Amino acid sequence: MPWWEQAVVYQIYPRSFQDSDGDGVGDLRGVTERLDHLAWLGVDALWLSPIYPSPLADFGYDVSDYTAVDPQLGSLADFEELVAAADERGLRVLLDLILCHTSIEHPWFREHPDWYIWSPVDGPPNNWVAAFGGPAWSRDEQTGRWYLHSFYPEQPDLDWRNHEVVAAMQDVVRFWLERGVDGFRLDAIDKLIKDDRLRNDPPATATFPLPLRGEAATLEHVYSAHRPEAIAALAAIRSVAGDALLVGEVFQPTSAYPPYLEVLDLVFAFEFLFAPWDAERLRAAIAPAAELRRVAWVMSNHDFDRLATRVGPDNLRAAALLLLTLPGAAFVYQGDEIGLANGPGSDPPYDRAGRDAMRHPMQWDASPSGGFTTGEPWLPPVDPAERNVEAQRENPDSLLHLYRRLIAARGELQDGFGLLDAADGVVAYERGERVVAINTTANPRPASAANEPDIATHPSALAEGRIAPHAGAVTRKSG
Ligand code: NOJ
Ligand code: MG
Image 1 (spheres, rainbow, N blue to C red):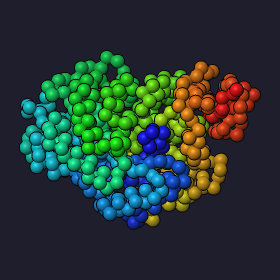
Image 2: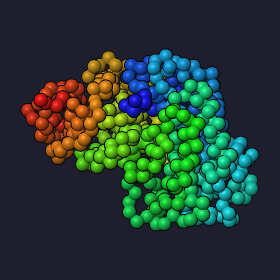
Image 3: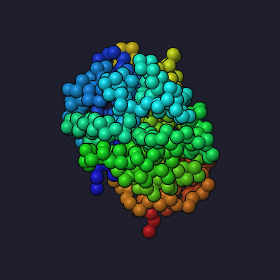
């Protein structure tokens, strides 16, 4: 069995995890200093959001050099130390690989303009819109030509039909594999290849099951995204990645995932991420994704409302139990293990798409800086006095301890997954000899359980044929 099949992967947003040098920005040495937290939690791997040099138009997702570390985050030597320290603790390391676009300040944009996608006319050649709003085409002031950007204008799209692009990115993969990386999270790959005829996207007929911003929601992105040719391009990445883990960010409904899984190991389960905390909606998201057998279960990341904000504080324990008992790999975003909610962000904002709120620093202790920095934090901590790792470690009833227990108990959960019939408001499924039941409501609900739970969200989660409000439990099948 590959190491990642049942793995828990912990997502680190490096600028907000731990600052080691007092400049108020998290860095790689800070990550290394805090690896014991991950080891204590029992996760198998960490995914670092981008660490490359970047002008920060999209906070690292605009890369200006793929084979270096942003000086604010550290150096290649720091990265090598991080990998070695992770290795000592049995932790694998995943990097974020941004394939679809570079920063407009990447030297490639001037040295190899033919590696990018340009309009054949003097203006936008079609109606494509950028993910963060506005047209997907902008005029390059230096040449007067129009280039494509699926995201911010500072992120010109690479042309993956150009073999030199493929070869350059293969070199990037080799570079990091040689430095001990165990895999990659592949950014925005449903937008990797676009229609070669640049046809207009038709108006949307049905509602897309994932949230789209502004005008993006008015079109059906059949030409600007999710082209079948993307699979061959990804196969070129696979051919150099060997058996390194490749996790795809495919911002598409579950039904679109199978072709990507021909060349990738996992894809994030986005319909699950966005499912409201409602038993029926959760079941509807889980069933088709579980059938694929190779989704990465995920409930939050640096792009969307934090888990605590989405499901509310009452449901955090049950959400943890759900995420960590579904069959297959699970991704945990830093801070979710202590129940960190969205913060106020920054004024003026750093991120024009409003995502500062999900990127506030990790809270290690109750001090005003949360133990994140000795300097002025780039984004303030949200509520370190109310929740922090140190206090929750001292309290066996804390959310943090529940995460740890759930991670430790994953070995008991076997194959043989199936959703079970359950009362309204309850999600129930089997995992081999175990049954998981989760009450998504604020009222007690009927639940049949003959045995004491192995693990539960609350001391009296199951009693007298009922499951308590907001509770979840894993029990042994009777007999
Ligand atoms: C997905 C990343 O998670 C997000 O942060 C970024 O803005 C876009 N891809 C573009 O790279
Ligand atoms: Mg720093």
